[in-house]
Length: 154
Image 1 (tube, helix red, strand yellow):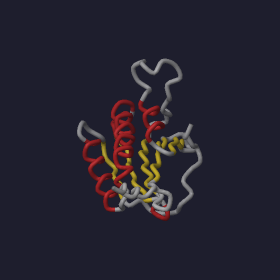
Image 2: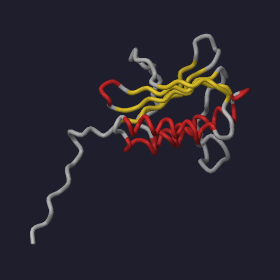
Image 3: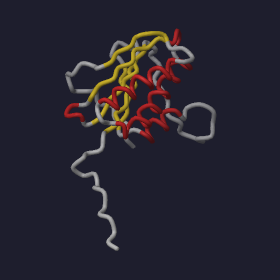
Image 4: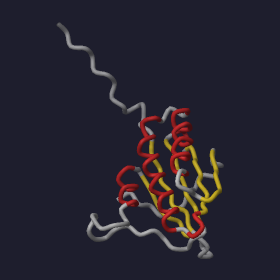
């Protein structure tokens, strides 16, 4: 399981921050923004996974947060090793992961986030005034990526 509850220790500022009420098309716009950053950083290989995970987090806000208001942050991990995305809201209810039948309605979004990301977690505010749900997708290490095999000899 890649669920981690330790907070981010890097002091870096987010490269992108949005604070608004989520609507029907918000996830689509945020996916486009995230993909632009990832492509610009040379991390296109994690874009599909990161977009899918972001969509699930935004869907949870739309479905479960009164007023649908949240903050979305995109961080480039130190050394360009990947991306971290956080979605924070003022709702004190923590998201639940399905324990039982995965075919039950609801609760599967975080299973999907877990399946497509390298790490994820939930950080509750100490004052009980909300939470942040986050995930990280790590870029492939070029030093260990296999090179193209040589062409066969005739």
